Image 1: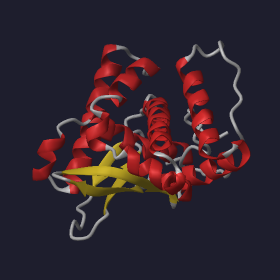
Image 2: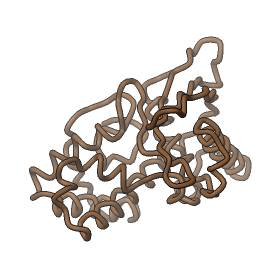
Image 3: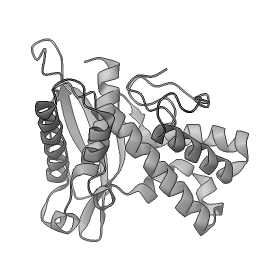
Amino acid sequence: MTACSMHRWSAFVLGGALALAGGAALAQRTPEGVVKEVVDATVTALKAERARQPGSIPIEAALAITRRSIVPQVDFERITRDAAGRAWSSASAAQRGALTREFSALLTHVVARLIATYEDEEFAVEPANAAKEPVVVRINVRQARSPGESPMQPMFVSLHRAGQSWRIHDLRAENVQIVRLYSANFAVVMERDGGIDGLIKALAERNARNAAPPASVPSTTPAPAQRAPALPSAPWEASSASP
């Protein structure tokens, strides 16, 4: 499996979580059961879209899949808090809310762009130990087009219990954690652009460009703090390959 493929499916699991509804029912499920439903629901939706319209999945359709029941399954406030690091503790309630909204919107768009490149990968979810939190669920991923040649590649999804439900708050693939990756980029932008308000502004501008027609707004993507083979190199990247 290529690094680009792992890049895509690392975010795919998060995107699948966005597509799974029914938070109250999660009390009766194991963490690995939740992840399996996440994967199955998203794969089913992607295959249905491809059957309806052969070829590449349009970004609008991918966004529609990604946006289904986003809040019950992904703890965006925790993801944002962890990515912001120490800046979160000094932020006001209004700043925290704005940062969470902009980061959530960005992740939704990034995930949609990535799952739109679905190529019939196969997934095997392993049992997890739910005795200690966070619970880490392992997923083995293999390209379906060459099952005899492509080895399984692992991904690890972190979940925690929130009330009666399980919620996703991190993901790791090829030793890269999504929260740590975004945290490094957030730190660069906050130092350069004037703290958390500068980060909120940068994210809002990126989200505005994502919502605009491709040629209507010039791109001014900030330079990434680091490069990684399996996940977006910067929070503003919304393509399926690292720059």
